[in-house]
Amino acid sequence: MSTLTKILVVLLSLFSIFLCGMMVSYVGSANNYKKLYSEEQLARDAAQSDAIKKADLYKEQVAKTKELEDRLRLEINALQERNNQMAANLQKTERLSQEYQARADSWKGVMTGFEQSVATMLDSLKLTQDQLEKARAQNIQDQKELNQLTADLYDKIVQLQRLESERRRLLEQKTELEKQVTQFATGTTLIAAAPVTQITDKARPAGTPISSDIQGLIMEIDQSLVTLSVGSADGVQKGMTFHVVRGSEFLCNVVVTDVDINKSAGILEMVQQQPKIGDTVATKL
Amino acid sequence: MAKRKIASSSDVYTAILALALLAVVGTAAFVAFKCGEYYGWDSLFTVVKAR
Image 1: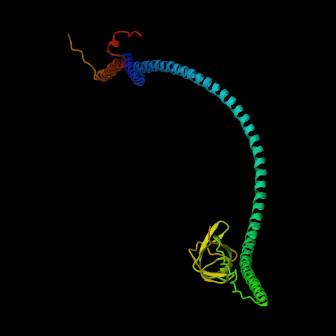
Image 2: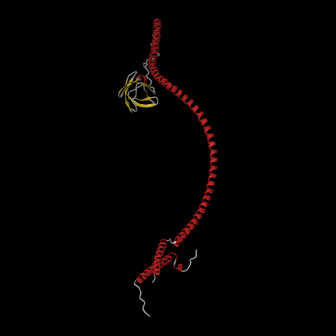
Image 3: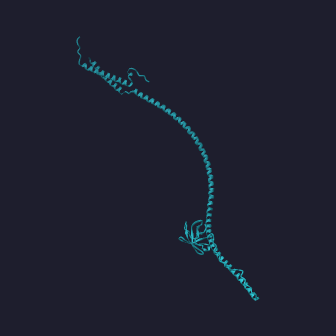
């Protein structure tokens, strides 16, 4: 084998090994484009199906949105109409409110006048009640004096009647004596006639009239004992029951246990409220 | 005919050639395997049409 053949064998072998190494490294590091293509195709198909679904969904959403828009438009129209109606009602209500406010103001003025009138009338009523109480007390006092005067008058009448009968009897005796003197002077004897006026019974003082309604005042109070301003001269008797009132309010009862001419005493019963000096007592409510 | 004497240095070059042949065959097998794996075994002898 010649030298040139040897050199060619060695160089050919070296280049073959070198080229094979390059080929192996290139093929080993090359990409699998088929696989990449398949993956990309799958991704594209998925994207297309997704796009179709999205488009369907978009159409559906558009339809829903349109339906919702129509419905909302109808509602807006209804609300607008209702708003207009309520605005009209509001104006009407405001007008009525102003009218009622004016009426209320006028009534307020009237009520203020009424309140002032009522206050004035209450004051007058209170004053009148005071005067009435005073007049009632004065009336009771006058009644008591009247009863006393009536009793005195009855006594005087009885005395006057008694004196009148005595005077008549004396006049008859005088007449009889004059007749006897005349007969004695003429010498005839007459039988003495009995006086025409016979003293059958002496007049007695009339009893004190018993008043059907006796009123008085409380003069003293000592625990359950009270002293009344009316007595036997007013017709008060032992055991009578008086009602104690203050105005129109019932306070208690008083049962008379001791009677004097112008006053009486008793004990309290059925006490609702404690009486005070000056409270009115009466046998009838 | 007289027998020709072969020099011992020829065995070294034969070994080098065998090594080179082995490298070429191995490379061809490797490339064929990769091509079949990636693009199918039909692509070894035919051209796959693009879809």
